[in-house]
Image 1 (tube, helix red, strand yellow):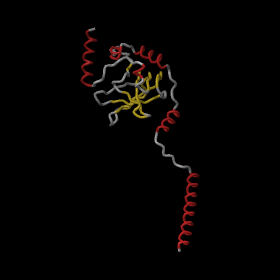
Image 2: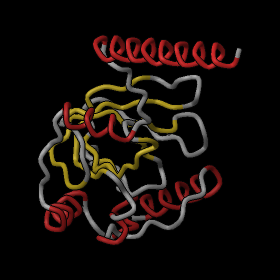
Image 3: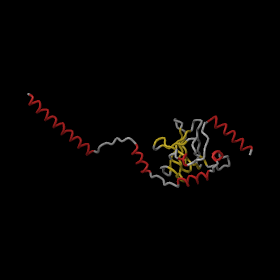
Image 4: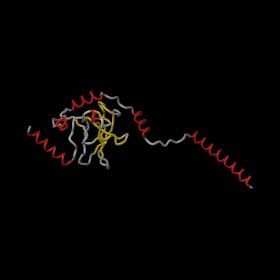
Amino acid sequence: MKKIIAVLLVSISFFSSACECPPIEPASKKICETYDVIFYGKVDSIIPCSTQGLGTVYFSIISLYKGAAEQHVSIDYDCTSACMMSFAKGEEWIIYSVYQHFDLLTVNLCSHSRKKITDGTVDFYEAASQRSFSAENSFLETTFGIQPYASHNALNDKQKEMQPHNEQPSAINKLWLLLISLAVMGIIFIISKKYFKNGK
């Protein structure tokens, strides 16, 4: 018991000096409204930090609770600052993520995201929220149900709708536009020629 308390005190001291996050409250329906995509998934692979200080983790979603996401999804995360996160292949997580823009999901250390602890170490999130990993899964499933995965085409279509459009006319339309332009120029030439002729 003393060892656990000591670990807690050291960890709290470390996080308070390294990364300032607000106190973690148990995930509620109201809190979940602040997230775009919530799921329970397993880490497939990780891409190391980029020059922008971001890493990318690839998940296979086991249960999608909220939002539109394919079964295999990538999440960007901070991997260099004091609030950096770390992931390892095979880990299971409940992820609470937000869109940086339409096709880029991000997660941060101060979110409600939590890892399933399997090695006997202390689950700090459980100590703070008084809810186990399995209890949180049950809460999310009861609150939101299991959502169907989004299809790739559906995501692409939605993304295209949200992007600025710069549509080019087809070849036939371009030809019609050219012919109409030539006709208009011809009419203007004839009218101006008659006008100048009558003017003389």
